[in-house]
Amino acid sequence: MSSPARTNQLLHHAELLLAEEGGSDEQVMARRMAFEEAALATLELALDSLLREVTEHTSQTLGGWRAWFEARDVQVAELDRLRELAAAEESWLAVLLTHVESLHADRGASSRRPQKGLIASGQSPALADQLCWCHREFKALLPSLREGSQEW
Image (cartoon, rainbow, N blue to C red; front, side, top):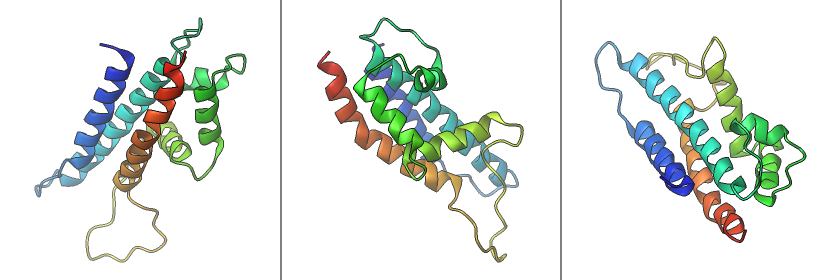
């Protein structure tokens, strides 16, 4: 499978996970949390795939988004654009990477939400909603990143 095809496949899988309904049994919250974390992990894999895709013309083979973002000796316009997005606190990529860091921590990225009918103030948007936004922004940016990469 080509790098672009793998990136597309992973983005599709994340979309399917984010669209899953939890059901109405006693496991509904655990199932929602599992879908959210699975979608997040899949989006991380899609980011890794995209980085391989836009850097395949270089002689570098680094492992994972962290290594690519830290490798300052690799000068690729698409990689620089992603680094800038990751550094912009309110960007979709910064939000995604914050959740990815949580995913790899002991606490995890997904959490239990209050039961319906309970008052909750000051809550941040649901993880699934944030991931849907990240997914949409990721897909919207993809064509321009690929266009620049294909010029090589």
